[in-house]
Length: 62
Length: 167
Image 1 (cartoon, each protein chain N blue to C red):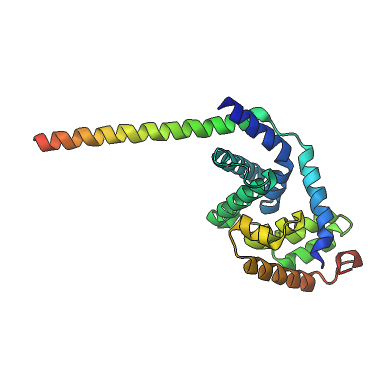
Image 2 (cartoon, each protein chain N blue to C red):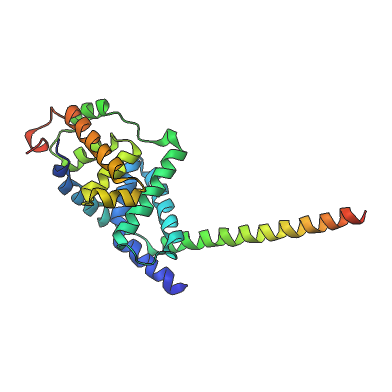
């Protein structure tokens, strides 16, 4: 089998897959959700760091 | 930021056919393909800010998409399309060989994840050196793998009609 003979089929395959439209709102939602998750992780990290600092200070004082 | 998002969405709209084709090459069920599409779009978004146009948009899409899919597949080994080439030959006799796209899918799905990426990039018209850069391999490795794939396919699909054999 010559792989070159499959090149037109690959082009056709790509063309067929590009015929269905992609929802811009869905992509926007997807990227905004990922940003939200990133912000939430940073927030969680800071809360944990503050808690750790408070606990460390309390333990030293005791 | 809003402008960045608009640009990104425009790029995805223009290239979603390529991304969907790659997802369909790696996953057989519609649900898995949708999941993979979302993962690829997310990964493209994460790397979009650092994309400085040093390569063509198309090459960047292929690089990020294929590397994302290969990593995803390796993480969830059980979901791989594990159809063997032997099974594929059986499928050919069932579905018929008049559809070139069907044959393409059978051939692609019979390959391992990295070989699949190499063959797809070859079909897209990339040279061995470019393929090696996209997939972080050496050019020699790409060349060796392509030759091995050619030999395997020649042996396994030798019973196919004349138009699929060497001209």
